[in-house]
Image: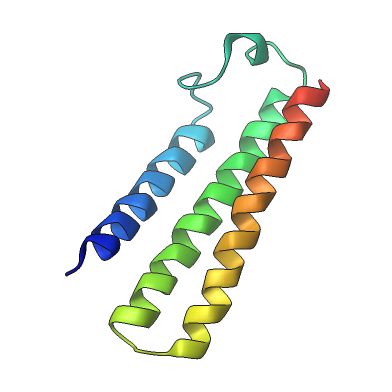
Length: 98
């Protein structure tokens, strides 16, 4: 197993953990000025769904390349991961609006 594959697996595990943290509405890792924001619950729920999507598509991405050796599935899930990553960045703007 190469180093890049290990980093990819660690990234997927990290995103699973972050999504669980956000689904449980934990305050850990949230800036203090955002803790009392009126739209924090909506932002955190959206963030949890996007992080879970990144983790799931990332898992399929890793498996499609290593196990199944399917290049088409690799590209489709890779594009989905990148799109969801940018959606999490745009989700930050929702928090800053409030």
